[in-house]
Image (cartoon, rainbow, N blue to C red; front, side):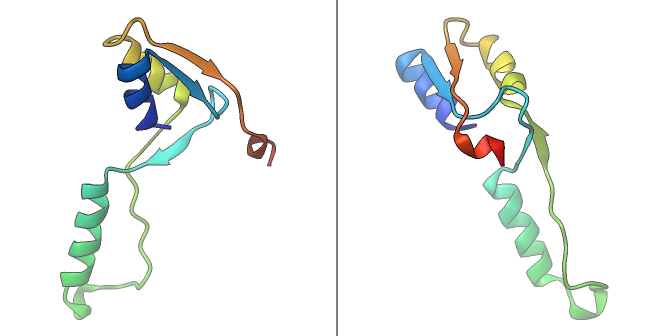
Length: 88
């Protein structure tokens, strides 16, 4: 949803979100993910204390994202139609 809202917002001035407004999800720029993987792969073995690492970036809700987008696209209309998987 975090990319689709920009496409739909610019092309159609509307976006139908399949999440609840307060659903917080982790997000990461692909370049940051690849950089973290690369740094892990080139690190000398003797410098690694573990074999499992968590790489995190940011988390936000649809409501937070759309609030920021509205500052730049004030005509964007957002509707929420939560997917049934939200009940899980």
